Amino acid sequence: MGLLKKFIEPVDMTQGAPWQKIILFAVPMLVGNIAQQLYNTVDSVVVGNYVGDNALAAVGSAGPILNLLIVLFVGISVGAGIMVSQYFGAREREKLSITIGNCITLTAIATLFVMVVASLVARPLLELLDTPESIIDWCHSYLLILFIGCAGLAYYNILSGILRGLGDSMAALLYLLVSTVLNIILDLLFVAYFGMGVNGVALATAIAQAISALLCLRRLMKMTDLFDLKAVYLKLQKKYTRKVIRLGLPSGITQAIFSMAMIVVQSLTNSFGEMFIAANVIVMRVDGFAMMPNFSFGTAMTTYAGQNVGAKQTDRVDAGARQGTLIAAATSAVITALILIFGKALMGIFTKTPELVDLSREMMGILAVGYIAMAVTQSLSGVMRGAGDTMTPMWISIMTTILVRVPIAYGISFFTRTPELPNGRQECIFISLLISWLFGALVTFVCYKRGKWKDKEV
Image 1 (cartoon, rainbow, N blue to C red):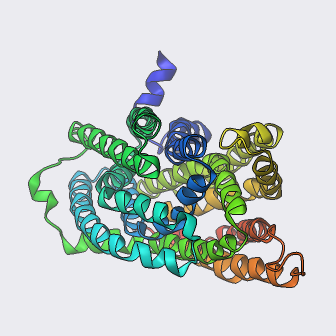
Image 2: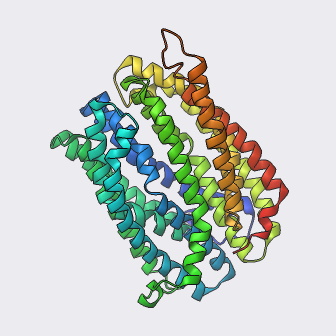
Image 3: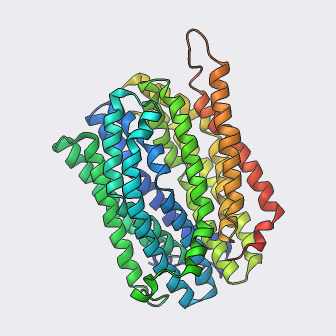
């Protein structure tokens, strides 16, 4: 019971052994991120088995456009998490209350904007990418439902980010698990029973995310010992709004650039046909699970650094960065090994087509070593963000995506063209991703060691 209580209570990272605090915070985050990844994975499994491989390709092809058009939510979430963790560490109740209230209002504005704009541009973007005619209608209807119902997605991400900034990663996990189970049930109900196809999985996801957002809000309203959630704090204050945007904008821009690069690469992916598109979807779904330790420890390091910088304990930040990065790399190595060992069985969950299973496993093998490199990138980037330096990780992401990944992908494709392979070798998609990960880890390590992030406190 004592260990369970430690996981349930909000984690104060300004005291105690750094590695213990990081693990206490990261474990619920890891479980939660795995659960969140189940949203997209279950969608893919259900449509792949009940509708077909083309439906599987349609859900995957919609992914990069969805990620591009929700960057506002990413920015607000990151900015909120940094400010909340630093004000919590500094025990500044009034500033903490204003920040949380302003983020709730900012999210409402961003949600309305995305609902309108994203719904209008989704179809033109799909056409711009030369999405195959056989799946474009499915892609569009899938996106339309998710954009119209994006309030749940928006508020879950922002409110769970606030909870994590307060050191409470367990509550966000519990609510996400509830909505994940609901999502699975609704997927099967809408697709297998009612025969709604791709529209069914989109509707299930929108409903489940709305439930998780409401549960997060309910939890925050009960945390009156830490801050006040009153109507007066919902009124936007220029000082705090600007801080949220200033801190979150680099991460939003990073996500936007990454998503645009994914869209550019998706165009190349589409040129290899429906079979490779479906294989890419399967690999990215499994990749999502392999990345979970990295994202979890990255977020844990952001909260850890934020709380300790706010408490003026920068000596703890360096110690935690070393310990957290080593734990993240070791965890990623174990999970990556398991995926490689059981890779073929994992691919078989999504489809019964043997050629598609083999192709997916082959592509997954190319990425393997890159996950350990990403553990370094995510952990050290998390430290820099938590300290208030959100610009350096942004520039590193821009460099690795625009100057490394996209040119290498198209370069390999161009130079490997033959009469038998008019579009080049399809491996170019994953080789370019691996190289960009390795390069990013090296640059992130160098920037962290230079230490300029230590002067970026909010």
